[in-house]
Length: 236
Image 1 (cartoon, rainbow, N blue to C red):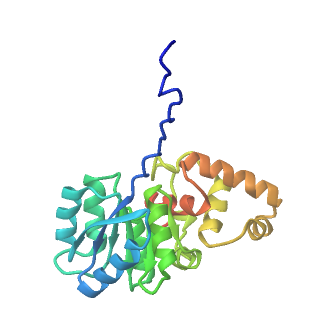
Image 2: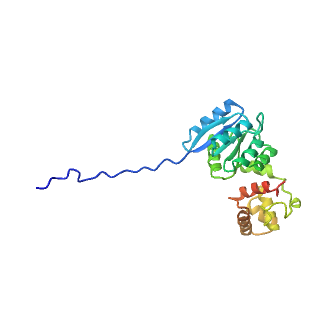
Image 3: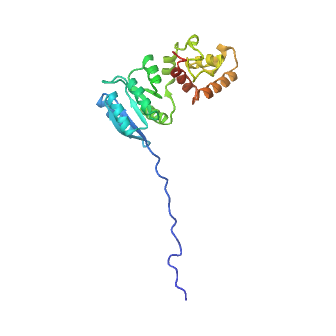
């Protein structure tokens, strides 16, 4: 008589998906209280991990080069080196690291300066906890997140079509005159319908122009296109 197999049934192996990598963040602010507060906010989100802190622009560069975080939350007014200058230097050395300005200042000069330096986000310190975390996540994906009203206010009146030349930037040199007009109005915060009314063209035509603009600039959306126009010098 054959011996009975005591292992007639096998327990299936269970596989678990490895946890997705958290977004690593460096917090830069000259206020210890602010840094601690932001750390607490971010630490409550399981998708975000704070890997370091810095108290000024110089230290921010040192910490960023050492830690190579995904996102840097950067204040503007700091000793030794301000946040805009630090962002410019940081992006030159680590272009894949994204920078979000977290500041008290919403002046046009600060917003435009941050965009030109390479920041992809701009959030005020009185923003909600959810917005701060949302901006970090958008930044990691390379998406621009600057609240519409702040961007519109900063860009309003700064677009000067007469100052534009075809040789000013390779980024915008392929845009037609009509596309430049549409982009100007986008930067001023106009809706598609408002743009159509001002240019005496159908709303569907405006959408087609926007699709072409976004494609030519390699932008993600209309806001990103306006930001690229600032960086390229189309918006002065």
